[in-house]
Length: 217
Ligand SMILES: C[S@@+](CC[C@H](N)C(=O)[O-])C[C@H]1O[C@@H](n2cnc3c(N)ncnc32)[C@H](O)[C@@H]1O
Image: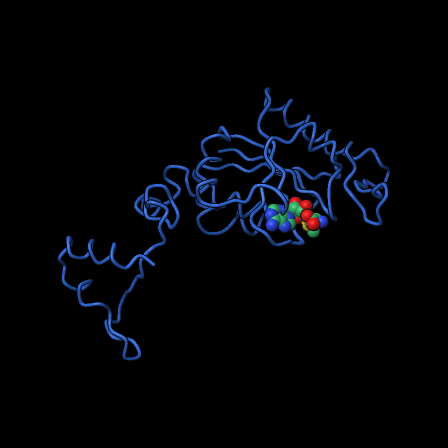
């Protein structure tokens, strides 16, 4: 999977993508992330990319640098790829949608991250294929919303997770009948007077499977 991210703060992705499972996925070339600084596409002498919105008091991202950056990526890739815009007010993301996006995004896509409150609507009308909300609340950071989507998608790439069973037993997943996972225990057997359910210590796999089904949360 290759993700092109346009952002004013591309560095904000680095610590997150350079740790744990996403870092390992990048090291194994299972997931590639190309970061583009939006200001590099500005014709303004000060590399500004924002301006005042018509009829409102807030700043928005101007259409020109966004259009230039999107066209640049499409030219570089050699064909049109899906463009995603994260927004609180559109289609809500859940595990079912993540599974659908994983299939339809075709392994390579662009995510636009702006700044301030909004981007010019014409960019959405002209270029954006999917508008995705990570749920009904408003974040300050566009990069954070994009990272949530990326993390949920990357998990589905074969070999990213060591144990494919974890993906099959992910809460809300299709393979797990959209249910939530059962409780999990480890050593010690007794912790603060609370005991691990004895069936999990029995070694009886069919009974353990029954216990798991009966204890879905
Ligand atoms: C401060 S928010 C803008 C909110 C906008 N004024 C509104 O009320 O919908 C800045 C940006 O962060 C991203 N963002 C914030 N919350 C989000 C969410 N729940 N899902 C997806 N993106 C979100 C979006 O790209 C959004 O445009």
